[in-house]
Amino acid sequence: MCGIVAYIGSQKAYPIILKGLKRLEYRGYDSAGIALYDDAVQCFKRKGRVAELAAWDEKIIEKATVGIGHTRWATHGEPSDANAHPHTSNNGQLTLVHNGIIENYASLKQELVQKGYVFKSETDTEVLVNFIEDIQKNNDYTLEEAMRVALKRVVGAYVIIVMEKGFPERLIAARKGSPLVIGVGDGEHFLASDASPIIEYTKKVIYVNDYELAILFKDEIILKNLGNEAITPYVQQLDMELAQIEKGGFDHFMLKEIFDQPASLTDCLRGRLDSENQILTLAGIDQHISIFTEAKRIIIVACGTSWHAGLIAEYMIEALGRIPVEVEYASEFRYRNPVIHPGDVIIAISQSGETADTLVALERAKEQGAFIFGVVNAVGSSIARLSHAGAYTHAGPEIGVASTKAFTAQLMVLAMMAIKIGKEKKTLSASEYQRYLVELALIPAKVKTVIASHESIKKVAIHYASARDFLFLGRGYNFPVALEGALKLKEISYIHAEGYPAAEMKHGPIALVDEHLPVLFVATKDAYYEKIVSNIQEIKARKGKVIAIVSADDTLIRSMADHVMEVPEVDELLAPLVSVIPTQLLSYYIGVALGLDVDKPRNLAKSVTVE
Ligand code: F6R
Image 1 (cartoon, rainbow, N blue to C red):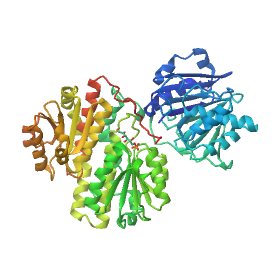
Image 2: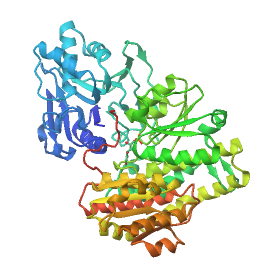
Image 3: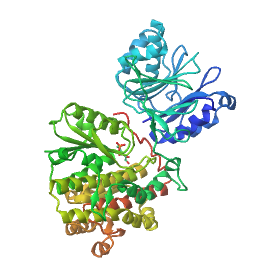
Image 4: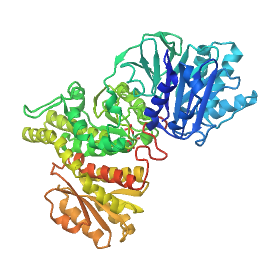
């Protein structure tokens, strides 16, 4: 949550920061602001989107070659001009942007108020900048010394970048819990919450670690820990292209990312699956195979859409690997003192690799001796680095706030894991193993077939765009798909939607059914087919409107449903990879029909780096 960008070099800082903030807007879009260091520090900030900042005074923009910027997802204080970052300290010496939450801000604020400090905003960030100022002033410290002392007293998560009056040639940044990347240029340096604002200028990056301070000049980077010991920066090469983070002719990132899925799934399989020669290579699993085959239990920890992928993985791993699996909301797991035994395997699923709840849950589990395996999309992210081993999903950057291609890539990796574990444990026969590899190879083409039917899904979407509520039902592997479909619709269209196991519907939700309620069944051909046919009849008997996602050769459900969306036939274990696609398109087209900002739904942010 919240995106930050900074530049120090010889180019005009403003356009670089503005463009960078636009790329990071998916992290929050309640307000935005930029501070530039010209002859003095000039700050411009507003409630609303980054585009509002384009109206800034030309003369300031012309000269400054140093600056910091911020796009906000509100935590402390409503979206407003006053609460927008950057924030400046009372004596005007320090200007700061912040991503994260200072949990003990109230007590720090009280201390400062007693000393006469005045606050213009409700933010924890303004407390932090004044807290640093206070320590600096009272002890005659340099900014660096004051930050080290201040940050040792701060509880919570942060990335901050600070500009100091009188030091136009230097920026100081610090990190704990929120992400920070340094772009290493030639005579210029960049700082950002992720690499997307940097990629256009350099592919050389340094990921800053927790409790590190980065002191940036245009020609030099100094990394230190909070104990003032120097750290040798580890410069990495980014594996990302600019085209991956642009819309490429689509109206929205969400649509582009839905359409990307045949390619992103192919990327996910690349170098791993050789179905002709019956080879499946998953280095992270291969290198630790005995940990998986001997595991007494696997716990999957995730949030949101990634948690839905975890539910499907539970079914897959239990079916093929015969290992008991529990799926946990990271936010609950981290606080409820769970029983973890050394030797337990924790699988963390995360697109961003930065979700605060997931990250802390893993830290707790790691302390207790669990083996952590990350299924992560963002390369080099905090969760990827915290894990003992892992498998990247290789979906490429996902910019639309609602997760689409990252979800299917997660499913693909999790399916490969289940197949591998099953083979090694011999709980999956050689012939079944071979059959699954063939099925895996066919998935990208099947997903493409579903996407090709987007015009007919659009018609269904337009038909139901004015619905007030939706029910999504599924059984078996398609039950989590129903949950995911409902989540996507809520996020994108603000229509109330609930996902349920189809049989569970009779224990309550059926009371909602009348002629106004659309009920979407994820009803591809599988072991539960006949059962779901009965559930559809139960809805029809109560005049509910039935939309069904069906297999291509289905005739029975087709004859019962008001609308159908067709997908190719797929083995039931892999069915979610194709049956989820119509739900993504349905949500997208309903959101567009309602005139909503599908890439940036209200109140949301893509990377939830606060708990
Ligand atoms: C929904 C969505 C969220 C994320 C959740 C976890 O479309 O994107 O529910 O899935 O915030 O995020 P990651 O996967 O980055 O840990």
